[in-house]
Image (cartoon, rainbow, N blue to C red):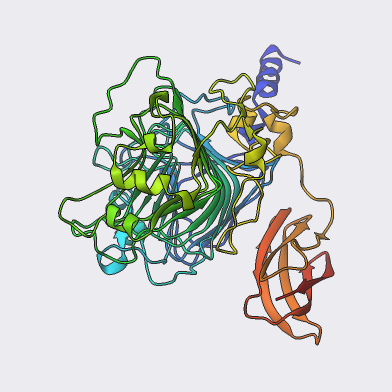
Length: 555
Protein backbone atom coordinates (compact mmCIF):
# COMPACT_ATOMS: atom_id res chain seq x y z
CA UNK A 1 0.00 0.00 0.00
CA UNK A 2 1.44 3.38 -0.98
CA UNK A 3 2.02 6.10 1.60
CA UNK A 4 -0.50 8.41 -0.08
CA UNK A 5 -3.25 5.75 0.15
CA UNK A 6 -2.34 5.01 3.77
CA UNK A 7 -2.61 8.72 4.59
CA UNK A 8 -5.97 8.96 2.84
CA UNK A 9 -7.37 6.03 4.83
CA UNK A 10 -6.14 7.55 8.09
CA UNK A 11 -7.78 10.86 7.24
CA UNK A 12 -11.04 9.15 6.29
CA UNK A 13 -11.00 7.19 9.53
CA UNK A 14 -10.62 10.38 11.57
CA UNK A 15 -13.57 12.14 9.94
CA UNK A 16 -16.59 11.93 12.30
CA UNK A 17 -19.32 9.61 11.12
CA UNK A 18 -21.83 12.48 11.33
CA UNK A 19 -19.95 14.27 8.54
CA UNK A 20 -21.01 11.55 6.11
CA UNK A 21 -24.66 11.96 7.08
CA UNK A 22 -24.97 15.74 6.84
CA UNK A 23 -27.61 17.24 4.55
CA UNK A 24 -27.86 20.94 3.75
CA UNK A 25 -31.36 22.40 3.40
CA UNK A 26 -31.25 25.44 1.11
CA UNK A 27 -34.78 25.66 -0.30
CA UNK A 28 -38.27 25.89 1.15
CA UNK A 29 -40.26 22.79 2.05
CA UNK A 30 -43.32 22.51 -0.19
CA UNK A 31 -44.34 18.85 0.17
CA UNK A 32 -44.55 16.17 2.87
CA UNK A 33 -40.93 15.88 4.07
CA UNK A 34 -39.14 13.60 6.54
CA UNK A 35 -35.95 14.34 8.46
CA UNK A 36 -34.46 11.27 10.13
CA UNK A 37 -32.00 10.78 12.97
CA UNK A 38 -29.36 9.12 10.76
CA UNK A 39 -28.61 12.54 9.26
CA UNK A 40 -27.62 15.96 10.57
CA UNK A 41 -29.51 18.77 8.82
CA UNK A 42 -28.01 22.22 8.22
CA UNK A 43 -30.36 25.14 7.51
CA UNK A 44 -28.69 27.32 4.89
CA UNK A 45 -30.61 30.55 5.48
CA UNK A 46 -34.22 30.94 6.58
CA UNK A 47 -36.18 27.88 5.50
CA UNK A 48 -39.98 28.05 5.28
CA UNK A 49 -42.36 25.11 5.52
CA UNK A 50 -44.96 26.46 3.13
CA UNK A 51 -48.74 26.23 3.39
CA UNK A 52 -50.02 22.74 2.60
CA UNK A 53 -46.68 21.09 3.42
CA UNK A 54 -45.81 19.03 6.50
CA UNK A 55 -42.36 18.46 8.03
CA UNK A 56 -41.84 15.29 10.08
CA UNK A 57 -38.74 15.14 12.31
CA UNK A 58 -37.73 11.85 13.89
CA UNK A 59 -36.70 11.58 17.55
CA UNK A 60 -32.95 12.07 17.98
CA UNK A 61 -32.54 14.29 14.91
CA UNK A 62 -30.12 17.24 15.11
CA UNK A 63 -30.78 20.38 13.06
CA UNK A 64 -28.20 23.17 12.86
CA UNK A 65 -28.44 26.73 11.59
CA UNK A 66 -25.62 27.81 9.27
CA UNK A 67 -23.60 30.94 9.99
CA UNK A 68 -25.07 34.21 8.75
CA UNK A 69 -27.02 37.20 10.01
CA UNK A 70 -29.40 39.81 8.66
CA UNK A 71 -30.99 38.58 5.45
CA UNK A 72 -28.63 35.58 5.55
CA UNK A 73 -29.70 34.45 9.03
CA UNK A 74 -30.65 30.79 9.39
CA UNK A 75 -34.04 29.91 10.89
CA UNK A 76 -36.88 27.47 10.48
CA UNK A 77 -40.31 29.01 9.87
CA UNK A 78 -43.52 26.95 9.75
CA UNK A 79 -45.92 29.15 7.79
CA UNK A 80 -49.69 29.48 8.17
CA UNK A 81 -51.38 26.41 6.74
CA UNK A 82 -48.25 24.26 7.17
CA UNK A 83 -47.54 21.72 9.92
CA UNK A 84 -44.52 20.39 11.80
CA UNK A 85 -44.41 17.06 13.61
CA UNK A 86 -41.23 17.17 15.69
CA UNK A 87 -41.64 14.43 18.27
CA UNK A 88 -38.66 13.57 20.41
CA UNK A 89 -38.67 11.44 23.55
CA UNK A 90 -37.35 11.99 27.11
CA UNK A 91 -34.00 10.37 26.30
CA UNK A 92 -34.02 10.98 22.56
CA UNK A 93 -34.79 14.68 22.03
CA UNK A 94 -34.77 16.67 18.82
CA UNK A 95 -32.07 19.36 19.02
CA UNK A 96 -31.96 22.66 17.13
CA UNK A 97 -28.65 24.49 17.45
CA UNK A 98 -25.95 26.34 15.48
CA UNK A 99 -23.41 24.73 13.18
CA UNK A 100 -20.83 26.47 15.40
CA UNK A 101 -21.99 24.14 18.16
CA UNK A 102 -20.09 21.34 16.45
CA UNK A 103 -20.17 18.70 19.19
CA UNK A 104 -23.16 20.04 21.16
CA UNK A 105 -20.83 21.40 23.86
CA UNK A 106 -21.84 25.07 23.49
CA UNK A 107 -22.04 27.04 26.73
CA UNK A 108 -24.73 29.29 28.17
CA UNK A 109 -22.63 32.32 27.16
CA UNK A 110 -22.76 31.43 23.46
CA UNK A 111 -25.89 33.29 22.46
CA UNK A 112 -27.06 34.69 19.13
CA UNK A 113 -25.37 32.12 16.90
CA UNK A 114 -28.38 31.63 14.57
CA UNK A 115 -32.02 32.71 14.27
CA UNK A 116 -34.44 30.26 15.89
CA UNK A 117 -37.70 28.40 15.28
CA UNK A 118 -40.94 30.15 14.29
CA UNK A 119 -44.40 28.55 14.09
CA UNK A 120 -47.23 30.60 12.56
CA UNK A 121 -50.94 29.84 12.52
CA UNK A 122 -54.50 30.97 11.82
CA UNK A 123 -55.69 31.54 15.39
CA UNK A 124 -56.98 34.97 16.53
CA UNK A 125 -54.78 37.90 17.52
CA UNK A 126 -55.88 41.40 18.50
CA UNK A 127 -54.00 43.10 15.66
CA UNK A 128 -56.04 45.32 13.33
CA UNK A 129 -57.38 43.05 10.62
CA UNK A 130 -56.29 40.11 12.81
CA UNK A 131 -53.12 39.49 10.78
CA UNK A 132 -49.56 40.72 11.02
CA UNK A 133 -46.05 39.82 9.81
CA UNK A 134 -43.30 38.43 12.04
CA UNK A 135 -40.72 41.18 12.40
CA UNK A 136 -37.47 40.47 10.60
CA UNK A 137 -38.77 37.32 8.95
CA UNK A 138 -40.99 39.48 6.72
CA UNK A 139 -37.84 41.09 5.29
CA UNK A 140 -36.60 37.67 4.16
CA UNK A 141 -39.85 35.98 3.14
CA UNK A 142 -40.63 35.80 -0.57
CA UNK A 143 -43.53 36.23 -0.90
CA UNK A 144 -43.97 38.32 2.25
CA UNK A 145 -47.15 36.37 3.10
CA UNK A 146 -44.95 33.48 4.30
CA UNK A 147 -44.29 35.60 7.40
CA UNK A 148 -48.00 36.29 8.12
CA UNK A 149 -49.87 35.03 11.16
CA UNK A 150 -53.35 35.35 12.64
CA UNK A 151 -56.86 34.34 11.58
CA UNK A 152 -60.20 33.21 12.97
CA UNK A 153 -59.59 29.51 13.71
CA UNK A 154 -59.05 29.14 17.45
CA UNK A 155 -58.53 25.37 17.03
CA UNK A 156 -56.00 25.71 14.20
CA UNK A 157 -53.49 22.84 14.19
CA UNK A 158 -49.85 23.55 13.34
CA UNK A 159 -48.76 20.05 14.38
CA UNK A 160 -46.82 18.60 17.32
CA UNK A 161 -43.65 19.99 18.93
CA UNK A 162 -42.55 17.74 21.79
CA UNK A 163 -39.24 17.00 23.54
CA UNK A 164 -37.33 19.63 21.57
CA UNK A 165 -34.27 21.58 22.77
CA UNK A 166 -33.53 24.88 20.94
CA UNK A 167 -30.10 26.32 21.67
CA UNK A 168 -27.95 29.45 21.06
CA UNK A 169 -30.54 31.48 19.13
CA UNK A 170 -31.25 35.20 18.74
CA UNK A 171 -29.00 36.52 15.95
CA UNK A 172 -30.32 39.58 14.07
CA UNK A 173 -32.78 38.55 11.35
CA UNK A 174 -33.61 40.73 8.34
CA UNK A 175 -32.36 44.16 7.32
CA UNK A 176 -33.22 46.20 10.43
CA UNK A 177 -31.14 46.08 13.62
CA UNK A 178 -32.96 44.67 16.65
CA UNK A 179 -34.97 42.09 14.69
CA UNK A 180 -34.00 39.12 16.81
CA UNK A 181 -36.40 36.19 17.06
CA UNK A 182 -36.74 34.04 20.11
CA UNK A 183 -35.75 30.46 20.80
CA UNK A 184 -39.35 29.60 19.90
CA UNK A 185 -41.65 32.23 18.40
CA UNK A 186 -45.36 31.39 18.15
CA UNK A 187 -47.56 33.69 16.05
CA UNK A 188 -51.31 33.07 15.99
CA UNK A 189 -50.85 29.38 16.85
CA UNK A 190 -54.09 27.53 17.57
CA UNK A 191 -55.24 25.22 20.33
CA UNK A 192 -55.17 22.22 18.00
CA UNK A 193 -51.36 22.38 18.17
CA UNK A 194 -49.37 20.39 20.75
CA UNK A 195 -46.46 22.27 22.36
CA UNK A 196 -44.88 20.50 25.33
CA UNK A 197 -41.45 19.63 26.69
CA UNK A 198 -39.63 22.41 24.79
CA UNK A 199 -36.44 24.12 25.99
CA UNK A 200 -34.94 27.44 24.91
CA UNK A 201 -31.31 27.52 26.06
CA UNK A 202 -28.93 30.51 25.75
CA UNK A 203 -31.04 32.79 23.54
CA UNK A 204 -29.82 36.34 22.87
CA UNK A 205 -33.46 37.43 22.95
CA UNK A 206 -36.51 35.95 24.72
CA UNK A 207 -36.83 32.28 25.48
CA UNK A 208 -40.44 32.07 24.23
CA UNK A 209 -42.72 34.70 22.75
CA UNK A 210 -46.42 34.27 21.97
CA UNK A 211 -47.92 36.74 19.49
CA UNK A 212 -51.63 36.18 20.04
CA UNK A 213 -53.07 32.75 19.48
CA UNK A 214 -54.83 30.16 21.61
CA UNK A 215 -52.24 27.37 21.87
CA UNK A 216 -51.98 25.56 25.20
CA UNK A 217 -48.56 24.43 26.44
CA UNK A 218 -46.95 22.25 29.08
CA UNK A 219 -43.39 21.74 30.31
CA UNK A 220 -41.52 24.72 28.84
CA UNK A 221 -37.96 25.57 29.89
CA UNK A 222 -36.38 29.00 29.43
CA UNK A 223 -32.74 28.83 30.55
CA UNK A 224 -30.10 31.56 30.57
CA UNK A 225 -31.72 33.82 27.97
CA UNK A 226 -30.62 37.44 27.66
CA UNK A 227 -34.04 39.09 27.44
CA UNK A 228 -37.37 37.92 28.85
CA UNK A 229 -37.80 34.30 29.83
CA UNK A 230 -41.45 34.30 28.72
CA UNK A 231 -43.14 37.03 26.68
CA UNK A 232 -46.82 37.16 25.66
CA UNK A 233 -48.35 39.74 23.32
CA UNK A 234 -51.25 40.66 21.02
CA UNK A 235 -54.11 38.90 22.78
CA UNK A 236 -52.57 35.54 23.73
CA UNK A 237 -55.18 33.54 25.67
CA UNK A 238 -53.56 30.09 25.98
CA UNK A 239 -53.55 27.84 29.03
CA UNK A 240 -50.16 26.71 30.28
CA UNK A 241 -48.80 24.43 32.99
CA UNK A 242 -45.33 23.52 34.28
CA UNK A 243 -43.21 26.43 33.05
CA UNK A 244 -39.61 26.67 34.31
CA UNK A 245 -37.29 29.67 33.99
CA UNK A 246 -33.78 30.19 35.32
CA UNK A 247 -31.71 33.30 34.72
CA UNK A 248 -27.96 33.73 34.77
CA UNK A 249 -26.30 35.98 37.34
CA UNK A 250 -26.48 39.62 36.25
CA UNK A 251 -29.32 38.92 33.77
CA UNK A 252 -31.29 42.09 33.01
CA UNK A 253 -34.23 40.61 31.12
CA UNK A 254 -37.48 39.99 32.97
CA UNK A 255 -38.74 36.61 34.03
CA UNK A 256 -42.03 37.53 32.40
CA UNK A 257 -43.23 40.35 30.16
CA UNK A 258 -46.93 40.20 29.35
CA UNK A 259 -48.31 42.75 26.88
CA UNK A 260 -51.85 43.16 25.59
CA UNK A 261 -52.63 45.15 22.47
CA UNK A 262 -50.04 46.46 20.01
CA UNK A 263 -52.17 49.55 19.27
CA UNK A 264 -51.94 52.85 21.13
CA UNK A 265 -55.60 52.61 22.16
CA UNK A 266 -54.98 49.16 23.73
CA UNK A 267 -58.67 48.33 23.28
CA UNK A 268 -58.60 45.63 20.58
CA UNK A 269 -60.03 42.15 21.14
CA UNK A 270 -59.29 39.56 22.27
CA UNK A 271 -57.76 41.01 25.43
CA UNK A 272 -54.65 39.08 26.44
CA UNK A 273 -55.27 36.58 29.23
CA UNK A 274 -52.68 33.79 29.55
CA UNK A 275 -53.29 31.37 32.40
CA UNK A 276 -50.16 29.83 33.89
CA UNK A 277 -50.28 27.08 36.50
CA UNK A 278 -47.39 25.47 38.36
CA UNK A 279 -44.63 27.78 37.17
CA UNK A 280 -41.20 27.86 38.84
CA UNK A 281 -39.23 31.03 38.05
CA UNK A 282 -35.67 31.44 39.36
CA UNK A 283 -34.26 34.94 38.91
CA UNK A 284 -30.68 36.12 38.56
CA UNK A 285 -29.91 35.97 42.27
CA UNK A 286 -27.49 38.37 43.88
CA UNK A 287 -25.71 40.52 41.32
CA UNK A 288 -21.91 40.39 41.36
CA UNK A 289 -21.99 44.11 40.54
CA UNK A 290 -25.05 46.07 41.74
CA UNK A 291 -27.16 47.05 38.75
CA UNK A 292 -29.13 50.26 38.37
CA UNK A 293 -32.76 49.45 37.53
CA UNK A 294 -34.54 52.79 37.03
CA UNK A 295 -38.28 52.51 37.61
CA UNK A 296 -40.04 51.38 34.47
CA UNK A 297 -36.90 49.98 32.83
CA UNK A 298 -36.89 46.28 33.64
CA UNK A 299 -36.90 46.99 37.35
CA UNK A 300 -39.61 44.35 37.74
CA UNK A 301 -39.31 40.57 37.67
CA UNK A 302 -42.72 40.38 35.96
CA UNK A 303 -44.42 43.20 34.05
CA UNK A 304 -48.10 43.26 33.00
CA UNK A 305 -49.02 46.09 30.62
CA UNK A 306 -50.86 47.30 27.49
CA UNK A 307 -54.25 46.09 28.78
CA UNK A 308 -53.11 42.51 29.24
CA UNK A 309 -54.56 40.33 31.93
CA UNK A 310 -52.93 37.22 33.38
CA UNK A 311 -53.47 34.52 35.98
CA UNK A 312 -50.78 32.63 37.89
CA UNK A 313 -51.86 29.78 40.14
CA UNK A 314 -49.89 27.39 42.37
CA UNK A 315 -46.58 28.90 41.25
CA UNK A 316 -43.16 29.73 42.76
CA UNK A 317 -41.03 32.85 42.24
CA UNK A 318 -37.59 32.88 43.84
CA UNK A 319 -34.15 34.48 43.88
CA UNK A 320 -34.75 37.73 42.01
CA UNK A 321 -33.18 40.95 43.28
CA UNK A 322 -34.99 43.61 41.27
CA UNK A 323 -36.71 46.42 43.16
CA UNK A 324 -40.16 45.03 42.37
CA UNK A 325 -41.43 41.47 41.93
CA UNK A 326 -44.64 42.38 40.09
CA UNK A 327 -45.66 45.55 38.25
CA UNK A 328 -49.08 46.20 36.68
CA UNK A 329 -49.20 49.20 34.34
CA UNK A 330 -51.48 52.12 35.18
CA UNK A 331 -52.14 54.61 32.37
CA UNK A 332 -53.11 57.83 34.09
CA UNK A 333 -56.69 58.79 33.34
CA UNK A 334 -57.38 55.67 31.26
CA UNK A 335 -59.82 52.88 32.00
CA UNK A 336 -58.21 50.71 29.30
CA UNK A 337 -55.04 49.41 30.90
CA UNK A 338 -53.74 46.48 32.88
CA UNK A 339 -54.62 48.10 36.20
CA UNK A 340 -58.25 48.15 35.05
CA UNK A 341 -57.93 44.47 34.14
CA UNK A 342 -56.62 43.79 37.65
CA UNK A 343 -59.55 45.63 39.22
CA UNK A 344 -61.87 43.52 37.05
CA UNK A 345 -60.21 40.38 38.50
CA UNK A 346 -58.36 39.58 35.26
CA UNK A 347 -54.86 40.07 36.69
CA UNK A 348 -54.35 37.67 39.53
CA UNK A 349 -51.83 35.62 41.47
CA UNK A 350 -53.48 32.72 43.33
CA UNK A 351 -51.90 30.42 45.92
CA UNK A 352 -48.40 31.33 44.81
CA UNK A 353 -45.16 31.60 46.77
CA UNK A 354 -42.42 34.24 46.61
CA UNK A 355 -39.02 33.91 48.27
CA UNK A 356 -35.79 35.91 48.28
CA UNK A 357 -37.17 38.60 45.98
CA UNK A 358 -36.86 42.43 45.81
CA UNK A 359 -33.24 42.61 47.00
CA UNK A 360 -34.12 40.30 49.86
CA UNK A 361 -35.79 43.14 51.79
CA UNK A 362 -39.43 42.03 51.53
CA UNK A 363 -40.56 40.50 54.81
CA UNK A 364 -44.10 39.73 53.61
CA UNK A 365 -46.14 39.70 50.42
CA UNK A 366 -46.94 43.41 50.81
CA UNK A 367 -43.29 44.22 50.13
CA UNK A 368 -43.26 42.69 46.65
CA UNK A 369 -44.54 45.77 44.81
CA UNK A 370 -44.52 49.53 45.23
CA UNK A 371 -47.96 49.84 43.61
CA UNK A 372 -50.99 49.99 45.90
CA UNK A 373 -53.29 48.20 43.44
CA UNK A 374 -50.78 45.39 42.87
CA UNK A 375 -50.13 45.02 46.58
CA UNK A 376 -53.87 44.83 47.21
CA UNK A 377 -54.19 41.92 44.77
CA UNK A 378 -51.16 40.02 46.05
CA UNK A 379 -52.16 40.37 49.70
CA UNK A 380 -55.87 39.59 49.26
CA UNK A 381 -56.50 36.82 51.79
CA UNK A 382 -58.66 34.96 49.26
CA UNK A 383 -55.63 34.61 46.99
CA UNK A 384 -53.54 32.82 49.69
CA UNK A 385 -50.19 34.06 48.37
CA UNK A 386 -47.23 33.77 50.73
CA UNK A 387 -43.60 34.68 51.35
CA UNK A 388 -42.21 31.25 52.17
CA UNK A 389 -38.97 29.33 51.61
CA UNK A 390 -39.83 26.46 49.21
CA UNK A 391 -36.60 24.70 50.23
CA UNK A 392 -35.44 23.90 46.72
CA UNK A 393 -32.99 21.05 46.53
CA UNK A 394 -30.51 23.13 44.57
CA UNK A 395 -30.21 26.46 42.73
CA UNK A 396 -27.02 26.54 40.70
CA UNK A 397 -26.15 28.27 37.45
CA UNK A 398 -22.96 26.33 36.76
CA UNK A 399 -22.30 22.85 35.37
CA UNK A 400 -21.73 21.34 38.79
CA UNK A 401 -24.75 19.08 38.91
CA UNK A 402 -26.43 21.12 41.64
CA UNK A 403 -29.48 22.49 39.85
CA UNK A 404 -32.51 20.68 41.23
CA UNK A 405 -35.69 22.81 41.36
CA UNK A 406 -37.70 20.20 43.24
CA UNK A 407 -38.93 21.44 46.61
CA UNK A 408 -38.68 19.94 50.10
CA UNK A 409 -41.14 22.19 51.94
CA UNK A 410 -43.82 19.64 52.83
CA UNK A 411 -46.54 22.28 53.04
CA UNK A 412 -45.94 23.24 49.42
CA UNK A 413 -45.68 19.63 48.26
CA UNK A 414 -49.34 19.26 49.23
CA UNK A 415 -50.41 22.91 48.98
CA UNK A 416 -52.03 23.09 45.53
CA UNK A 417 -55.52 24.53 45.22
CA UNK A 418 -58.09 23.26 42.71
CA UNK A 419 -58.08 24.35 39.09
CA UNK A 420 -61.11 25.76 37.33
CA UNK A 421 -60.27 24.29 33.92
CA UNK A 422 -59.93 20.63 32.93
CA UNK A 423 -56.83 21.41 30.86
CA UNK A 424 -54.74 21.63 34.01
CA UNK A 425 -53.40 18.37 35.44
CA UNK A 426 -54.58 17.96 39.03
CA UNK A 427 -51.33 17.85 41.03
CA UNK A 428 -50.81 18.28 44.77
CA UNK A 429 -47.65 20.42 44.65
CA UNK A 430 -46.99 24.09 44.00
CA UNK A 431 -44.42 25.04 41.38
CA UNK A 432 -43.35 23.05 38.34
CA UNK A 433 -41.79 20.07 40.09
CA UNK A 434 -43.07 17.41 42.45
CA UNK A 435 -41.09 14.23 43.08
CA UNK A 436 -39.88 14.03 39.47
CA UNK A 437 -37.28 16.31 37.91
CA UNK A 438 -38.63 16.27 34.35
CA UNK A 439 -35.58 18.23 33.10
CA UNK A 440 -33.51 15.05 33.14
CA UNK A 441 -32.38 13.52 29.85
CA UNK A 442 -33.77 15.75 27.11
CA UNK A 443 -32.67 19.27 28.06
CA UNK A 444 -29.36 21.06 27.56
CA UNK A 445 -29.49 21.68 31.32
CA UNK A 446 -29.32 17.92 31.82
CA UNK A 447 -26.92 17.01 29.01
CA UNK A 448 -24.45 19.74 29.98
CA UNK A 449 -24.36 18.77 33.67
CA UNK A 450 -26.35 21.56 35.34
CA UNK A 451 -28.86 19.17 36.88
CA UNK A 452 -28.24 16.74 39.71
CA UNK A 453 -28.74 13.67 37.55
CA UNK A 454 -26.94 14.07 34.21
CA UNK A 455 -27.51 11.06 31.95
CA UNK A 456 -24.85 8.36 32.12
CA UNK A 457 -24.80 7.99 28.35
CA UNK A 458 -23.28 10.33 25.80
CA UNK A 459 -25.31 12.50 23.44
CA UNK A 460 -24.47 10.09 20.62
CA UNK A 461 -25.76 7.12 22.62
CA UNK A 462 -28.91 9.01 23.52
CA UNK A 463 -29.53 9.73 19.83
CA UNK A 464 -29.64 6.01 19.10
CA UNK A 465 -31.76 4.89 22.06
CA UNK A 466 -35.44 4.46 22.80
CA UNK A 467 -36.64 3.44 19.35
CA UNK A 468 -39.50 1.01 19.99
CA UNK A 469 -39.06 -2.55 18.76
CA UNK A 470 -42.77 -3.33 18.35
CA UNK A 471 -46.19 -1.74 18.00
CA UNK A 472 -47.62 -0.89 21.41
CA UNK A 473 -50.86 0.70 22.61
CA UNK A 474 -50.92 1.70 26.27
CA UNK A 475 -53.85 2.02 28.62
CA UNK A 476 -55.21 5.54 28.55
CA UNK A 477 -54.79 7.76 31.58
CA UNK A 478 -56.67 8.72 33.58
CA UNK A 479 -59.15 5.88 33.28
CA UNK A 480 -62.04 6.22 34.01
CA UNK A 481 -61.93 9.80 32.71
CA UNK A 482 -64.05 12.94 32.34
CA UNK A 483 -64.00 14.51 29.82
CA UNK A 484 -60.43 14.13 28.49
CA UNK A 485 -57.73 11.49 28.62
CA UNK A 486 -54.32 10.73 27.12
CA UNK A 487 -53.51 7.75 24.88
CA UNK A 488 -49.88 6.71 24.36
CA UNK A 489 -48.64 4.37 21.65
CA UNK A 490 -45.41 3.24 19.95
CA UNK A 491 -44.60 2.70 16.28
CA UNK A 492 -41.48 0.57 15.50
CA UNK A 493 -40.96 1.84 11.93
CA UNK A 494 -42.27 4.47 9.55
CA UNK A 495 -45.89 3.62 8.85
CA UNK A 496 -49.32 4.94 8.05
CA UNK A 497 -50.93 5.30 11.49
CA UNK A 498 -54.65 5.34 12.21
CA UNK A 499 -55.99 5.77 15.75
CA UNK A 500 -59.79 5.60 15.99
CA UNK A 501 -62.31 5.53 18.84
CA UNK A 502 -65.50 3.42 18.65
CA UNK A 503 -68.55 2.98 20.86
CA UNK A 504 -69.67 -0.49 21.96
CA UNK A 505 -71.95 -0.69 18.89
CA UNK A 506 -68.86 -0.50 16.67
CA UNK A 507 -69.65 3.00 15.44
CA UNK A 508 -66.66 5.28 14.97
CA UNK A 509 -66.94 8.38 17.18
CA UNK A 510 -63.51 9.97 16.63
CA UNK A 511 -60.33 9.77 14.56
CA UNK A 512 -57.39 10.93 16.67
CA UNK A 513 -54.54 10.19 14.26
CA UNK A 514 -54.53 9.61 10.50
CA UNK A 515 -51.09 10.22 9.01
CA UNK A 516 -47.71 8.70 8.28
CA UNK A 517 -45.38 8.72 11.30
CA UNK A 518 -41.75 7.78 11.84
CA UNK A 519 -40.58 5.25 14.45
CA UNK A 520 -41.15 6.61 17.93
CA UNK A 521 -43.32 6.95 21.01
CA UNK A 522 -46.39 9.17 20.74
CA UNK A 523 -49.22 10.49 22.84
CA UNK A 524 -52.50 12.13 21.91
CA UNK A 525 -55.30 13.74 23.91
CA UNK A 526 -58.92 12.63 23.49
CA UNK A 527 -61.68 15.08 24.43
CA UNK A 528 -64.98 13.25 24.95
CA UNK A 529 -66.98 16.24 26.18
CA UNK A 530 -69.54 15.69 23.40
CA UNK A 531 -70.04 12.00 24.19
CA UNK A 532 -72.16 10.27 26.79
CA UNK A 533 -70.89 8.07 29.60
CA UNK A 534 -69.95 4.53 28.70
CA UNK A 535 -67.26 2.15 27.52
CA UNK A 536 -65.33 3.04 24.37
CA UNK A 537 -62.80 1.09 22.32
CA UNK A 538 -59.71 2.71 20.85
CA UNK A 539 -57.89 1.00 18.00
CA UNK A 540 -54.38 1.54 16.66
CA UNK A 541 -53.78 0.44 13.06
CA UNK A 542 -50.33 0.46 11.43
CA UNK A 543 -48.71 -1.37 8.56
CA UNK A 544 -47.27 -3.90 11.02
CA UNK A 545 -50.39 -4.66 13.05
CA UNK A 546 -53.62 -3.72 14.82
CA UNK A 547 -54.22 -3.47 18.56
CA UNK A 548 -57.16 -2.27 20.69
CA UNK A 549 -57.98 -1.33 24.28
CA UNK A 550 -61.05 -0.21 26.25
CA UNK A 551 -61.61 2.98 28.24
CA UNK A 552 -64.46 4.28 30.36
CA UNK A 553 -66.02 7.73 30.26
CA UNK A 554 -67.85 8.65 33.49
CA UNK A 555 -69.74 11.95 33.64
